[in-house]
Length: 160
Length: 182
Image (cartoon, rainbow over all chains, first blue to last red; front, top):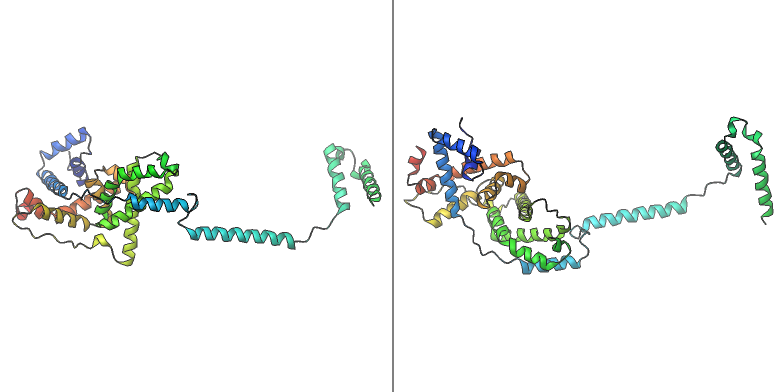
């Protein structure tokens, strides 16, 4: 086995190597003074670090945290990004701008001019096409246009 | 967590009680300050509460919480670096003058100074790996770095610590630093 990299030695000390690779590495360490020396230094450093024990009596965060959570809850539903008022302001501005634009558009845009003749012609053409009569005769030859126009005229005369 | 997601504040209290000690210990070692650690962990639990309904138990809760703590420590570090005042970076990298023998308190202070003098990412990796007992793969899970990045970070960190603590290590093995180098 060739000399392992330092990462392998660290894994060995930390107990992260599987049994097989760990045994192979130990076998190498028995033959290689350089690697054995490096491992001994790493182990000494590893053990020294054990002396840095942090004081276990940490502050109890719950009383302060509870107040913060309660005030957070009172502020509104959690799906609202209460910590980002800038986002809320931006969203409100966009909604207002779109609303104003739509309202102004409906007031200012003039209605389209009525085109009864063209519409009547188009309806007849669509009817002829849907019945498949366009294969046999032109639109005017079916007589449908004249019929529809006379119906519309009589309806408009009947209307006071 | 499901109770926390339902808005049950008492359930969050139980989570805080169970996890706050370890989270504060982690943050203290990373930031080097008890006050900053309290601030970071408090913020972390507040984020847990706000994100509880989005929590999916794909990882252990502890891992998730520690990821939040680590990210907040990194955020704070970036802010401090911007204003040029990184609290945990204050300790000087000074190899302690080797006396005849080191007391436990001296050893602890020297270890603390050496770890806090590491570059921030290396310090973070060492704290998670050596002090919190995470494997390299788990450190990668907490930090979001690749496992190979974690390994190279740890190799550099332990190499630096070996240099900085050489006198102490030699003393603990009954050798002088010169003998240790030879």
